[in-house]
Length: 167
Image 1: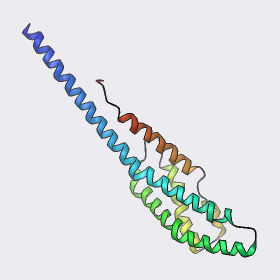
Image 2: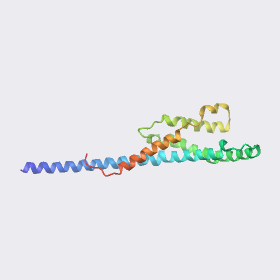
Image 3: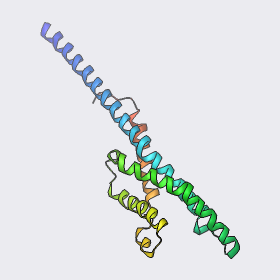
Image 4: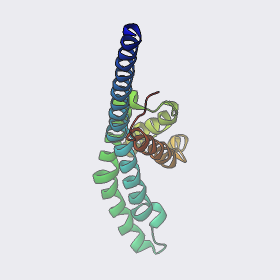
């Protein structure tokens, strides 16, 4: 009887330890997911959206046909590039360079290398425009890709906040 009681006590200690370990692992996982969002995906997504909006609303796609108004739009676009795109691009490049260790396991650094190259070449070609820039266009679908991975991480974060049961 004494051995049985001791066995039950040991089992309880084991179960409590296992629950505590699972809870600690869940907290660590939630911290990492939060860090991925806060330091990589959220700022990257916000900067890409800002650049996209600036390009579409003040950039060449928005230029009027009238030559006089077109010149004015070009001057505005020049200022937008200098004051919005170039600083945002510098931040995007910095995030990719310094925070790539936070890329999710379902994602790949290769997706961001084309963006990184585009940003580097954009700055160079602003100072020295040539037709070579055509080879370094903004990577199609990158903003949607970042949004998709970000949404997946948000879903994982919500799931990680659910109470853990003994596993």
